[in-house]
Length: 150
Image 1 (cartoon, rainbow, N blue to C red):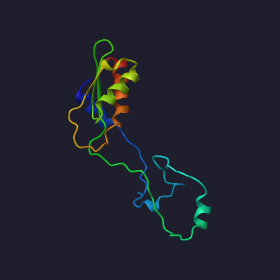
Image 2 (cartoon, rainbow, N blue to C red):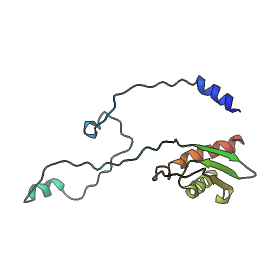
Image 3 (spheres, one colour):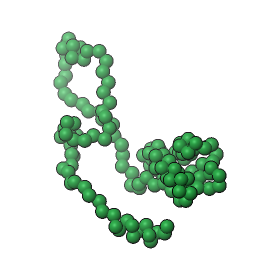
Image 4 (tube, rainbow, N blue to C red):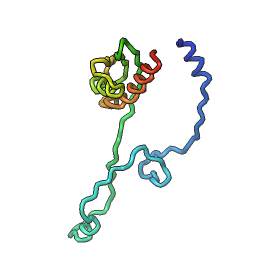
């Protein structure tokens, strides 16, 4: 109900985790035992082994083109405040407020004009907050509407 109550609750939280060795070099990664966040994208066309064997010249080496995402300093934050009727205002750290508006509206089953998305400042996020905030915004909006409070 209050900021102090939230802080007291946060102090009571206990987090359990296992400390695991870090994989610093991509070549040290063992896909069989090291958990990957996403599934690798594999494209295959034709018989590569036969084409390489039949090639007049071959260069043997390795190349890795994996996906990469940068790390932004601030976390994903969303606060939703229910308004009159179907209206909701979402304060969110997003670079795509229009997309967030439409996604929250779709999630709640209301028209887009019933959702207002406020972004304090956009900053130079280079796309790291383009769509990732949508899930947090939708969850906050669902909770706000069901609980009828922020």
